Amino acid sequence: MSVDNFVTENFRNLVSAQIVLHPKLNFFIGQNGSGKSSLLEALFFLGHGKSFRTNKLEHIVSFSHDNFIVSAKDANDNQLGLNKNITNQVTKLKLNGEVTYKLSNLVEHFAVQIVTPESFKLFFGGPKERRKFIDLGMFHVKHDFSGLWRKFNQVLKQRNAGIKNKFSKVELEYWNNVYCELSNVVAKHRADYVELLEKELNVMLGLLLPDLSNQVSIQYLQGWPKNKNLYQCLEQAYDRELAQGFSVYGAHRFDVKFLYGNHSIEACLSRGQQKLFLLALTFAQAKLIEKVKRLKPILLIDDIGAELDVNSRTILADTILQMNCQAVITAIDEEMIKPFIINFSSIHNNGEQQEFKMFHVEHGKVIAKNEIKMSE
Ligand SMILES: Nc1ncnc2c1ncn2[C@@H]1O[C@H](COP(=O)(O)OP(=O)(O)OP(=O)(O)O)[C@@H](O)[C@H]1O
Image 1 (cartoon, rainbow, N blue to C red):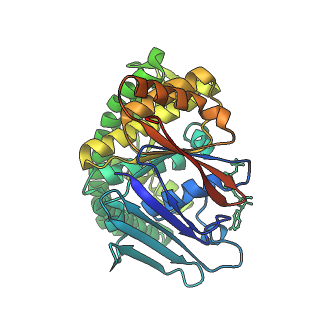
Image 2 (cartoon, helix red, strand yellow):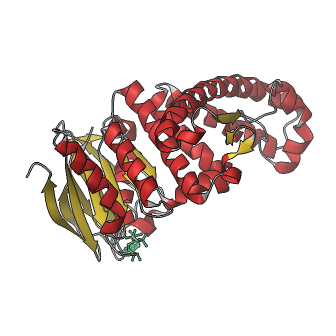
Image 3 (cartoon, protein in one colour):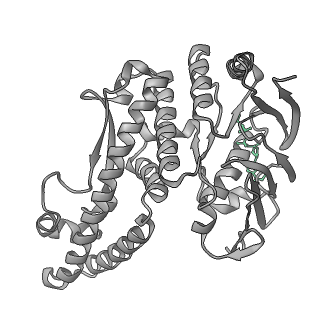
C-alpha cells in the first residue's frame, strides 16, 4: 500500500496542510526542530493509534489546542482518519466516511514500520523496547494474537490483584492454571514469530551487512527459565511474588537478544553497522507483514544521514529500491540523500522509470521542492 495524500491538523508544530506523497520515495529535508520527525510521528500515529515518542497526548497536540487530526487517502482510495481530543480523551476514527470504533479496522489498511535515532534503544534500552518491537510485528503477522494477548492481560491483572491481596497458594491455584495455559500459548506464538523474523533478518543482512548474513540469531527468552515448567516456577516463586506484589514470571516478561555467533550485536558492531542492523531488522519485519497480510508497510526512516557514511547510504538506497515499497525519509540536508538520487537515476538509464518527491520543512511548513521525474 501507499499513501497518496496526507493531512495533519494541530499536530505538534506542523502547519495544517495536505501533503501529496509520491508512491515510492519521499524526502523531507529540514533543519533541527523544523518538524521532520513530527511528520513521521503523524504517519505512525495513523498506523498505530499512538506515538513512537511519547504516551502523553498533550505533548503531541499543538500548543493551545485540545484536539488533533491525522488523515490519509491510500492508493486504493481508502480514506482513513483519526481525531483525538486530549481533554475528554475521546478518539474518533473514520474509515471511508464511516465511523469505526476499532483501531484494528484502520490498521488493517495501514501498516508502517519505522527506524529513528531512538531505535538504538532496542540494543541499549530495557526489555520494554524489544517487547514493543516484537509485539508490533506479532500484531500484524499473527492474526489471532491481539485477542489472545488481551485475554492474557486480563488474567495477568486478576492474578496480580490476587498477589497484592496476599492470596494463599490454594486461592491462587485457579488463576495460576489459566495464566500458565495462556502464557504457554502466547510464548509458542512468539517463538514461531521470532524464528520467522530471524530468517528474514538474515536475508536483509545479506543486502545491508553481507559479512554478517546467516550468522545472526535472535535468542528468544520466553519469560521464565528455559526448559522449566511455568507452573512449578510460580510455585517456587510464591514468596518472592508476594513480596514484590506482581507476577515475576510469564509471557509478558519475555525478551530477545540479537547475537552474532555468541556475541551480542551491540558489543561487536560499530555504531554505523548497528544502524544498518536496525534497518535490516525493521525491513525484515516489514517483509513478514507483507508476506502474511499482502500489505506492503510504508517505511519511515528518520534522520537517514546519522551514523551512515556514503557507502552505507548507497547500499541502503539500493535495498529500499529492491523492497519496492513507499518510503518516507527525513534528512537535515540534501547531501545526505544524494546516493538515493544517483541510484534511482541509474535505474532510469537502464530503461525503468523512477520518480521521487522532495519536500523542505521550515518551521512546521512543508513545501514540495520539486517533483523530479527521471524520465524528463
Ligand atoms: N505540541 C507541540 N506544539 C507545537 N510545537 C511543538 C510541540 N511539540 C514539539 N514542538 C516543536 O516542534 C518542533 C519540531 O520538532 P521535530 O522533533 O519534529 O523536529 P525535527 O525537524 O525532527 O528536528 P531534529 O532534526 O532536531 O530531529 C520543535 O521545535 C519542537 O519544539
